Length: 354
Image (tube, rainbow, N blue to C red; front, top):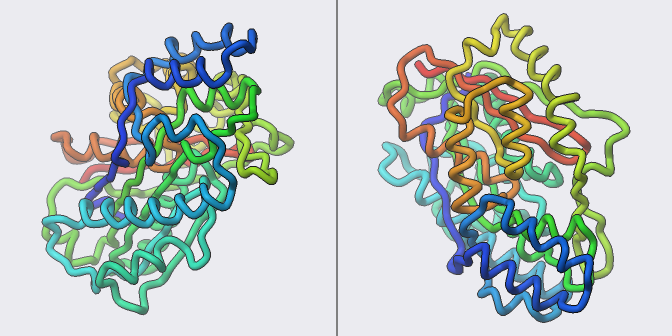
């Protein structure tokens, strides 16, 4: 069993309004009529602000893969370190108490992996187990939590971290006038977040009250759907793949998957008090509401994070969960966490407050 004890996040230095990003894209692709017609996606995204690792003017000029990936490593380490510090702040433990670190990312490459670099800055034990997870996109944060839950189930005294860092803005391509690139640019932001997960016999858990206790997790891959979401990796870096069919898949594919998962745990939707969703975009949130017949109150936290931070890929669900953790929740209430990712895939978790 795994208890979510604490959360923390770190935002990059530069905040831009949706209007500023739209003006930038209009300037970059001026004179290209299809882009002019598509600029309304920025207005319809219901995003107000996003954070980026560089000032918005930086994205007007070409930067090759080498430069962007070098920047990814530098900024991901800095933000990852800050997210960990914010997560562990005021916790009754030392860095040496951390037994394992699950690190999730998809928007850059680093060998040694990010947590190894962070371990050279923060005073972790040199024997920490390192589990880097790459390539799960928006589903990565939920997947990292699921793997941490399974680890703590095997080692009930364990104290582990799940770190998710994504710098989506560094994947922006100046030469890509595709619809996927424009939609991605209207949605994606940068961010880092960290979760502290502990086994039920951990001394940290014993000192806490009413925590979300993960009691089930499920990963499901939809076969023959590799072109729904992901990266096309070329000489200039990562080119986004983003299908318009994602909201439809929520209703036609995800709904029965979730219903089966609940049935396996002998639960129904009526017993779910909290829906902790990765907000892929406004249409995805609406698809959740329509598919599951839930009220907008259950997606309010996801909508708030989307509005203030955009879609940051894997860390986004941690931002949502961090808001939920600050609420006064009664014992025995149940939450469902859900995220969609490349493959096409979903990661699902059930948690009960105890």
